[in-house]
Image 1 (cartoon, rainbow, N blue to C red):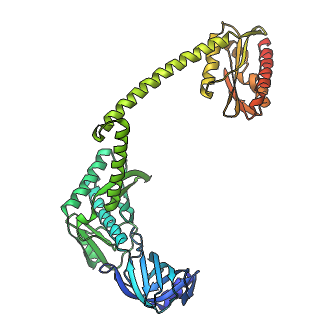
Image 2 (tube, rainbow, N blue to C red):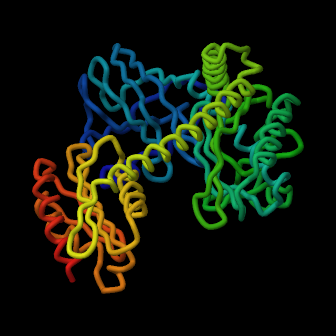
Image 3 (cartoon, helix red, strand yellow):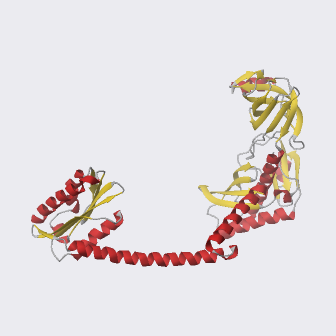
Amino acid sequence: MDAYRELASRLPRTEFLGYEHLDAEATVTGLISGGTVVTTAGQGTEVELVLDRSPFYAEAGGQIGDTGTLTMGDGTRLQITDTRYGLEGFRVHTASVLAGELRTGAVGEAAVDAERRAGLMRSHSATHILHAVVRATLGEHARQQGSLVEPDRLRFDFAHFTALTPDQLHQIEQAVNGHVLDDPNARAWYADRAEAEAAGAIALFGEKYGDTVRIVDIGDFSRELCGGTHVAHGSQVGAFRLLSESSIGSSLRRVEALTGHGTLCHQDTERRLLNELAGLLGTRPADAPRALNKRLEALAAAQAELGQLRVAELRSQAVRLAGTALPAGGGQLVAQGVTGVTPGELRQLVSETLAQLPFGPAVVVLALEHSGKALLVAAITPHLLGRGIQAAQVIARAAKAVGGGGGGTGALASAGGRCPEHLDQALTTASEDATALLLG
């Protein structure tokens, strides 16, 4: 910042030529490298430079800064990677010295990346059109609260109290494209602030304006105070495509959209994906949604059938496990290791096994090795609950045997550990504790 102040104190304001020209002869009036004002910068150096006149737009009003090249008369070449304001009055151009040595006072040709600028102009004009359409669709309260204008891509924040419906988003997208196809003229003019506001120009929240302001009109439906760069005719925006809509805070919404080449590339990607999907489904692209829906319905039916078969299989397994019950302390005990089930199914299997046992006090403990870990689940009957016994008491010591812990209250408890090789020992321990609890 000290370097900026030093330059700002002695340099004249940069003359901006970028509304009319994308290239211009310019003199290097200031150089900063490593936060210090310098007079030279050699090849490979990253620098910030100030020009007496510049076609490069400095980031402002949501529009990111221009990039391009600076070629000096002695062959020194620089790549301009960003343009922004340092302190009020001059533009700071971030650059890399590609060849030669740059010196303060050198004169060269500054050239904006024309293709990138064109993408920025498309997006900025589309942002103005979108703002007008959003207000017309949702109401005058839906004013712009922020934006980001990038080549063929934009982000637009506005005031609104609810999420937009798919129909509203479709209506907005169609209306923007309708304005683009109508090819309205875009023009910029200057006036004092009061005159501009009297003419209906919208001043954006958070922006700073001088006594004399620049107004951008697009057709007869959009008039905003704006210092950004724009297309000359609406049709130059190209196709407009809304990508998303989301909340970014209380009564604040955000939409993201594509313009120009961005829209065309996106549509091409979607077309290729649709064709690929149609090929996989063995149908035409137009019939792909219907074909996919049929496949999904068939899949859902198959999954439901498999689910029923799995329930029957678990019930059959529970019957077999109940058949291994041994008398223990006036009740019955099942303590077994199982395989081929998921952790969720293990809990179901324990409960189902307990339900298969004859009426009376009973405990079921099942063990499973899953993904390299030990799992234990225990269940007890209401008889034991009535005596103040908890299922967690059955596997408390067993959990320690497998190097872990567990919990649960009431009739069902689970535990896990990192030592599945000790599951047999854990089952023995759980059996001993269950027997003691059954004895009361």
